[in-house]
Image (cartoon, rainbow, N blue to C red; front, side):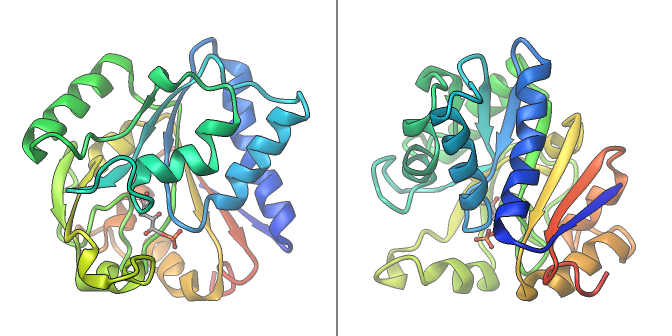
Length: 240
Ligand code: F6R
């Protein structure tokens, strides 16, 4: 495991972008697993900046997102389809047909089967980028999710509904379940990059790296990955 700690938001974003660029430049057909949420926004902005400066291309890359809400249209501004277009896909040269997210317009079980079939065809990911939930979730694998899961329908926990509900104008509009790539698919990735920022993540970051591995704290499973890289800011790393 490597733990890399940065003082400023720009140093943090540069370090994360370097990791992605390293994979993009080392493979003819790199496969990226991508998160949404507030944490990766600065990384995506740095990737867009590099593309616009002619320093980076994603034309040969494939992406698989970690998750999507059940029941939102892909044009809903709270959907992860929308998020990815808004923050990354519309501003770089990745081909739209090479970007994949679980399909919230299919019946959920069918969406999981379809996503697993696609991933089996193109995966595993060369690099899986993850954010970290306050309850230790990775992707939307909430506490108690079996580590053996592949893509599955996950009921969202009270803590996630609370954390993400603020983004929905009316909290009752927030879906109560999500489609998420399972821990087994994350673990298969060649490298895992844990992106973490802020004092509010310090305690859970320490927990997932030091607590005995348990499905009650999904992020602890990352201790089993042979190539885990943590990119943290000083606040998130303050308890390590
Ligand atoms: C989202 C995802 C989630 C988030 C986590 C942290 O695709 O996989 O696990 O990474 O909820 O969210 P932020 O970054 O908003 O704190």
